Image (tube, rainbow, N blue to C red; front, side, top):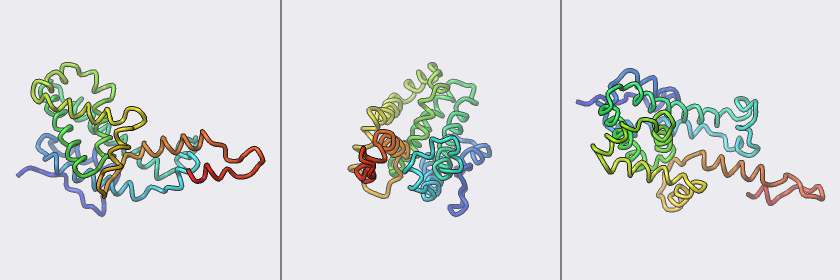
Length: 213
């Protein structure tokens, strides 16, 4: 019987991915089980997000931990999952074994996408596309030898983030809910609206057009 990540849904915490990963053999896990548990944790983080924190771009300010705690919590969770992904790969010395781990993470991305967990899939894809992992040229060469379609799947997902997340926007228009989208898309849009539009018009009146955006 394969071990699975044992997390009680009610007590899932944002720090769980790495804490749990240190106790188990990653390659013995079923990708579908990992994706399911990551989605449970993702839901917990998302439900706590205060939309009001997006209105003034508070997450970009020096005292962001006070002004935008729920967005900061999401960011911390994003970084934690990315770090976990990187550590699973970088702490494995054998090139072929590293390649198998990357292939397993790509399988997890596929499972996350089948659950409409775009946010979770983005976190792992970001780690696989990061500088430390991208330098593993020999490892990715072996990935292509073992499973040629794996890199095509990863590159297709990464391409969705190009041109202001055009691929994600198209996907969200057709996806059947429930869905956990990528928060970075909305943070970028909010910042564009905040920085690109004045709060008041030249006559001193409130810029209601900005408020409607």
